[in-house]
Image (cartoon, rainbow, N blue to C red; front, side, top):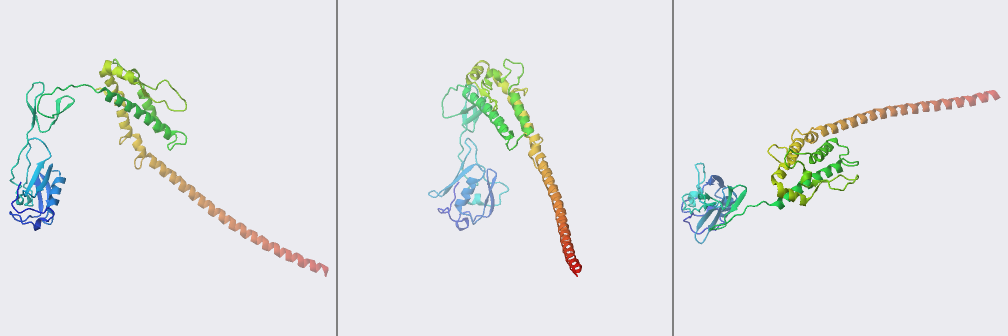
Length: 347
């Protein structure tokens, strides 16, 4: 878009610029149906920065050599930019000649797949043409796309799964052992037992029915001093992928939701969910909060009983001191009487 006033110092406020179409009124103007605030005291550059920071999806700049504002869409393709709306309260777009500015619209990407019909996209990144594949159109011409499976990524995902199971079980064992922060906590032991048991369970009646068959086990080592960790035999796992990829996947997740990962997800979502027993324990006014209040009540009751006992003992001590003082006075009186009686006997 262009404006017909003289070259603008972008740092000057709008109210100090002599626009041909008159002064800017305060309010809002819209680009791509996104409202942008403006007031006459704003600097010209501040308004452009506000446009760029908005959700309008455009980049605004000013060229002082040609005295023009340039608005470029961030979205590629044949989309035009919408300027203004019925809800605008500022005349900013009219004043700077953007309302009816000439636009140069880009072109959509055009392509064919395997000689099929021509398709168009407003982006060079194309999805949903070949299942599970994203095409990046880099230029004009013909390309051959080879689609394969990334076994390395699958192996890494299996390793991550085994590592996370081991990490969770080790952390639970550390927390609940003697001297741990959650020593003897049975709820966490239940989760730990579920995880260990589930890793050994069978799945369906397919060609593969357990993780052991694809190389996931606790290995050959055993120590009574530490928790048994699961290991991945990468060679066996890759062999299973090569021979029966679909059944390997079904061991972890399947349409019946009976895979090992399916069982983990369902159980753990239930455990940590809003109504899960771990959440019931840890949430505000949950079981742990109730236990804390119970212990605090017992402490306060014990302190009250101790205070009553202390007052009783202090009262008894005071009475004993009073009795002792009385006995001492009586003893002194008797001593004096005995002395007087001795004198009378000598007379």
